[in-house]
Image 1: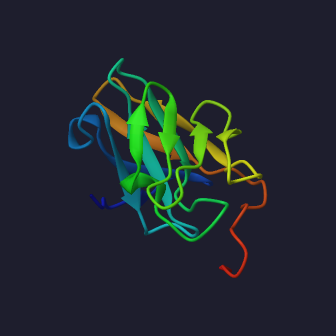
Image 2 (image 1 turned 90 degrees about the vertical axis):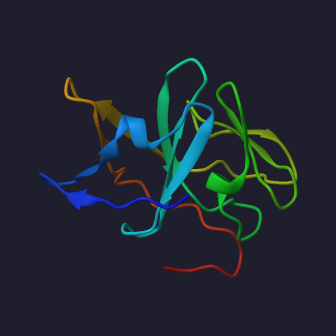
Length: 125
């Protein structure tokens, strides 16, 4: 699934109503560069990370979400959504995380990290 984003105050982006991200799934937002993926866990938590696996060019939003862990659909690397760190290889480098806020009216906002993105070999902005 792919969503749309609206720019907000410096570094903040309004993504969508939380209801547009079903529990247990992730949505890719390609309107920011590099694209980000937002995940809504079965427990109701919401996390945002860069969408591209650091091992090879694959969308993590297309992966398998279990708890706070996402598995890349291409080679099964796993990442912790809370920290971005690698939980299972072949990826060796973690993904960049972004702060998420869900407002009282249910909108999902992301504050984009100012850290450098960690892209796989051969992928550039």
